[in-house]
Image (cartoon, rainbow, N blue to C red; front, side, top):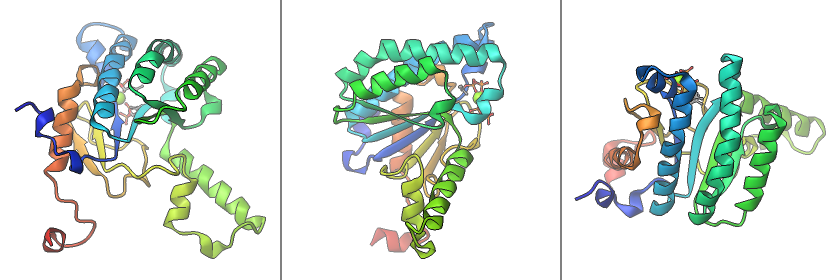
Length: 247
Ligand code: IPE
Ligand code: IPE
Ligand code: MG
């Protein structure tokens, strides 16, 4: 039986988040510049997006560029920004074909205006699609997002639009850039690194974490199915005992 056929439909996560890591090492192994790895990472994005859409997963969130990634050499940052523009141009048809809606989280204003315009065009074009919501985390970091949420809540309290006792977990979730989305049930990180790197700190509170050694440009549908199968084999307890869960 193929890996895909082993998946149990009703136990699929509704939201999968991925830290796409290892592009630079992939390129280095081949004696190439880091940007070569980023270019080859696009195929992995396409495969995972199509696989998630086909399976009926509702949300896929990909960490594409972190706040901290601005500290990389300017040549790499510039190359990543141009790649973003060309990828959106070439992949919008794939999104339309697969009924995928594009969304972004992160500090969009910090992106070059050309990137912002491309993103906006694609977001508008795909806005009526009803299948998978693909969220790209761009110029994103969880601490940035939490600071923004704090500022927003604090100003509402100050202007008496809200009482301090209205602050609860749901309200905080709603003020994050993922507001309205369920928390990811599964978070995948490629390339053998075992850390979160400032990604969805609040939202990952009870996510299952899956780490694999595959470098992102090599990540294919079967690697994605393997992660989902591993997820389906886990018992999610949310603080309860195993016996309580089995009832
Ligand atoms: C992930 O690959 C892509 C981005 C962070 C933009 P890296 O570029 O981090 O690749 P490694 O981790 O250096 O191999
Ligand atoms: C995390 O990867 C950010 C993205 C995948 C976009 P990094 O490669 O930047 O993370 P660290 O620096 O190894 O933690
Ligand atoms: Mg990395």
